[in-house]
Length: 210
Image (cartoon, rainbow, N blue to C red):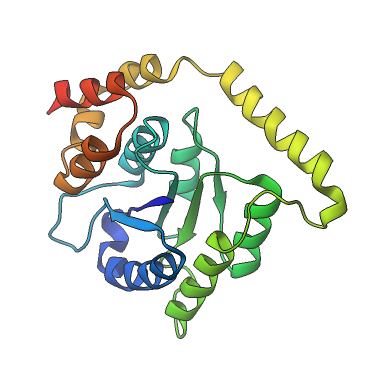
């Protein structure tokens, strides 16, 4: 699995802490991690609005399989990511949230609060969240005998989102292009997208903005 981590400006200083815990879990499970957001206060500035753009580009192009995002509360990043077709982002405060989202909703992104409640033992909470998010088989249902209805509803929700949305690239092109241009300007994002994208139309669109 390819996993992208992205921090926005207000929590950029937390990036090394989160990245260390994510790498520890992902490395043990054989997953690759791409740190595509801000890795410090002096990095290319991103807001949670930009996180939605770059997460959607990476997921819809299949450059990555999963996104770990967040902001101060985690709410803004979650709403930003969920604005796009092809992205199903859950809100995660503790390990049980990650486990239940993985088993019941089987989405492809998580948004975490990197300020609210981020105190003593925060790095342990991050580690346990990532373990529950990425260990074992996903989408098995919880409790297990609820699998059929939960799987059906997750699929139906995805169908509703597609029906209510424009075609992905049409939608991105309808956004203020200055927002998109700023979002895709980060070199680590570009490296991840162009090395792993399976959608030439998305890659070409991003190249046209750079």
